[in-house]
Image (cartoon, rainbow, N blue to C red; front, side, top):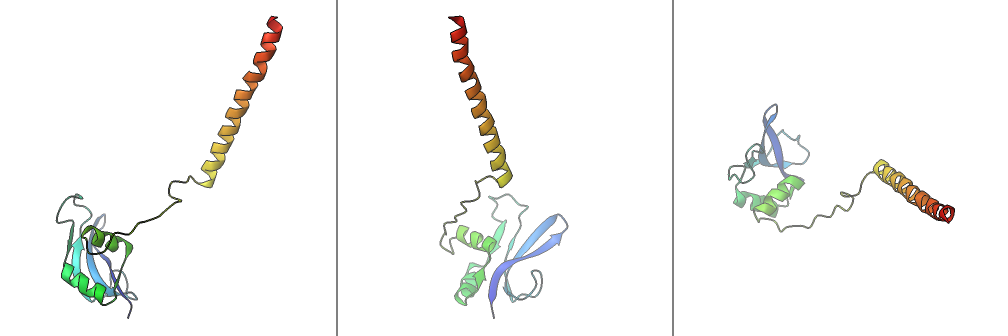
Length: 130
């Protein structure tokens, strides 16, 4: 049985509230779970102690049993110093999209043409002045 430690959404519309649960990965997100391990309330301020509550002993147990945390839960566990911090690498995050790159190239080409045109006219003006 493939176990996951993940978030199960609760709360009403536009007012999310999550339970941190240990569940079989084949079950629906908000469906059957084996054990509730804690809660997460994203509406509270980030520095609030009540934002994330976890039973760390049970989390350690499930990790020992082979449960894999989802990305968001893994970040919470890293913040609680249960898991070692992992370096995330997203090199494409800062790269603009293809259309933005095309626009930047066109703008650079126009700027280059504009800077060359006055440079060509300047020697012609000097020759006319003599």
